[in-house]
Image 1: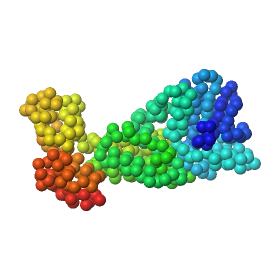
Image 2 (image 1 turned 90 degrees about the vertical axis):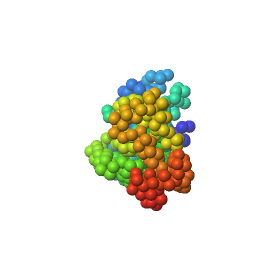
Image 3 (image 1 turned 135 degrees about the vertical axis):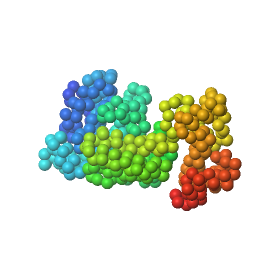
Image 4 (image 1 turned 45 degrees about the vertical axis):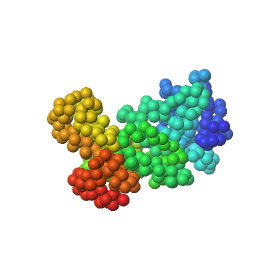
Amino acid sequence: MYYFDHNIPMYIYADHTFDTCVPQQTSLTFPPQKYVDILISKSDRISYCATTYGIYFGCLRLDFDITKYLIIGPVSNVPYSKDTLLNMYRDYVISNENKDEFHDFLKKIPHITKVSLISKLMFLNYCIYEEVKNPSDFLLSNSSPKTLSPEIVQMNYDKKENYVYNKSYVIEEAILKLVRTGNVEGFHSLQFNNDNFHIGVTSNNAIRQLKNNIIINTTLCTRAAIDGGLEYDTAYELSDHFIQLAEQTDNPDILYEILGKTSYTFAEKVAQAQTPFSTDERLQKAIRYIQQNTNQHITVGDVARYTGFSKSYFSAYFKENLGFTVSDFILRCKLEEGRRLLQFTNKPISTISTFLCFSSQSHFQTAFKKQFGMTPNEYRRKRS
């Protein structure tokens, strides 16, 4: 019944044979043994493996009978190219007279990504064992040796042809807004699946498709980061880094990691550019308090009391360690928030000024021009 919903081939593998499969098929299209051996050799209940040309297989060990495994695949994120098919002919040992049958088999399989494959295995695992697992947690332990955070995993893009593009636009804008505003925590709440994100097919080769997606995503994030206040040189250096990194590997797992890592890293850089760095926990506590209360009438005394110091001592300590006063930083944070509101909302300047607790609209406009070299109206026109 699950196959009828997703159309991804599924197999029960037991005692070194495939004893059940959907759809019905001959041994011609059974997963190649070398990939099956990789899948069942892993200690985790859920596992996956990739071919060198970007095709994935997934596996769920059936604990009620440790000799049985549920295997699903093959899946690809793009239509099969001639080069990919040649590789598959070798892996599946397809003769010329069997190519038509093999092509018919592949045509029925939807194009999905590794993350979508893992999500389906997670769902099956829940159905059988009533165990809730997070795909990002699973991918952490099965990724390449490089560090891979849950936020990065969530940024792996699922693509499926023939879905409505306006859904993708909404998600894309949400990602770019997180980058512009340096909202690293916001990535925790983003969810991606085949239905809501579509980058588009730019190659008929799975590996080249991933590399192209990295280039596209990096380009968009670079512009968003610059809009968010990241210096041009820093933004373009980071852009070059990700693109060059992608071109240096054909490993699909590493490419997926890079693809997800771009947006999150750009958001981190924007956040760092907006936040003064200090290893002092008391100063970091004060910084976060100010940033989180830009819509309040906070004073130096308020911040000092929040951190447990006297106003005079805290003022001197803050200036000595960070190089600017508490008042200057409060104003800077309010103006940064004002800049974001001007760019991403259509609220009147008077409303923004009041929201940020400026004494008057004139005060806000004067402070804004001094900080950014243009009036709020000029900034909004420039960014529109």
